[in-house]
Image (cartoon, rainbow, N blue to C red; front, top):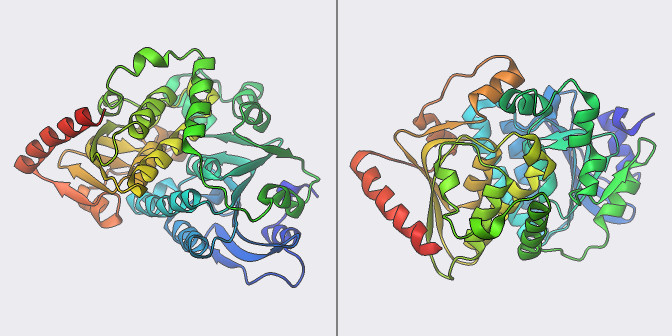
Length: 397
């Protein structure tokens, strides 16, 4: 039987040695367990695509948070087996808040150097791709697809001339695991006949800790951008924060420039980042660059900045949505929202494409209750705050 067709129970059997695993805990589309894989103890979290496409709602995010917290305490390796379209859109802001909390813990796990690996199956999109690209080592099924935005979303937001989602060869050329391996976003490809346990064993390696090398990652992503024709040197003289305040989606270049600003900020310098950004760009060009890696890199830069004892606050002034919201909100100390801010799981057009229906806008109070924002800033306080924020951003460059 093909590895992608195995039942969840059969996958567990192929990972752990007989008699050397704990109970499997199931939370919606996610199941977690720990046991011995080829002589090495590991925690594994696995999505089940037969349950709502393996998507991450509140229940799944909370379960993964608990798993990650345990490894944050004892440094046991974590393996993620992902076949998922990402966040569950109809969970609304409650789901977005849960994903933010979970991703913050995941960032801390990675920065601490806990061994982490991702095994990607047929599909790994959106928030699932952000989890995968956060891991120290990654493998994918040779016939799998990986991306920040799925083919249908790229077509809907950038036009059929950019990507025809019905053109299978074009989709595979863009999102296919072999293409991701060529770009170095994936370390290892595996085939349908391979054993889950053998593949994970190759990924986990030894138990040595592997802290994220942010500056090495930054340089590698810079080279990828410049190899694709991006002119970064002249752009670095401009305000890297402008793109995040422009009311438009941000691409890999915008994200790298902001990350560059953050890691170059003086020691001890507090920072406030004003955001009016409906999400990350859904374009062929950005997906060719493996946009998920840039989004994750920004989150790591922000969280690392905080870990060094510096503070950074995100001020949501307009629209905030998507994976770029998660990267920002999980990485900063706090999210403050102006009274005119709008928070969404994804931009409305993307939601309509995926669900074939719209979702009602939720209020800022819903966002506060869900943990999507930490504070609502009103009226006069907002005007004074925005002046202070623009000053701190200029000073931090």
